[in-house]
Length: 289
Image (cartoon, rainbow, N blue to C red; front, side, top):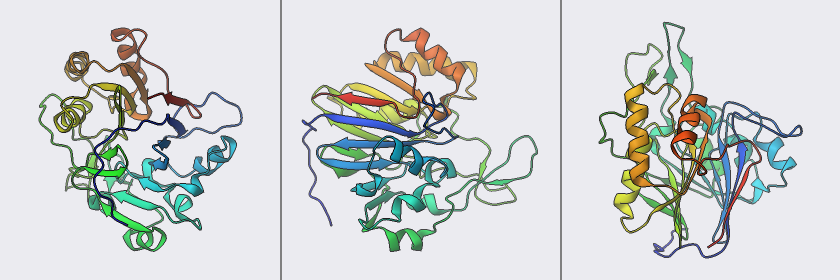
């Protein structure tokens, strides 16, 4: 089912619930190295990423989140810690639409410190398997509106030299062909008070990502920034220049998660007092229009 572009803003209450993350604070919930967020916006239900596959369904049941009723499943990129819950998310009678970059289905490996290569790609389902279980698969290479006022960026231009968007990521098991991670994308929700931006792992760089979104929506401010900022191994220079850029972008709220790293989270909290909140499994963020 195709949709005509909608250029309005969500005027109903917006809520986001963290279903998978590294940190858990409640005894009946489970954590993992992964990321997944349930989004209810403009009457639509969206599952953004599906975690590493170990906790999604358990946490959804505990939190009374009906992931089986999702209208759409959107994937930020093809790494296992964001996609391994996809099998469970698509094994439902109501088949959601899936929004994904085609490069997410490529084989993906990681190798660090001369350790043996590790497969870190989308596990359990190949492209054909996703097609069979989804109502429709949408290829996100350019910005795409997946629900009224809810957008995916598609590929993100990488213009800031200080954001090291590489890493030990490869397309072959011999780890000779670097993975450019063209599939990395973010999601934003338009509200009357600004944009609520949800990140996956932000392999394109958080500043590149936000500046691209602002390029697409130049009249909108950043109301909230939620998700993985991929600063866990950031150099001192990258961290400082990221903080300076975020000061210019001036988000009202920052909720660092997953691959941000605890050092970077502490620096964000010190630079933006009163505007940084901890992410954890079960955290609910509500935004009134």
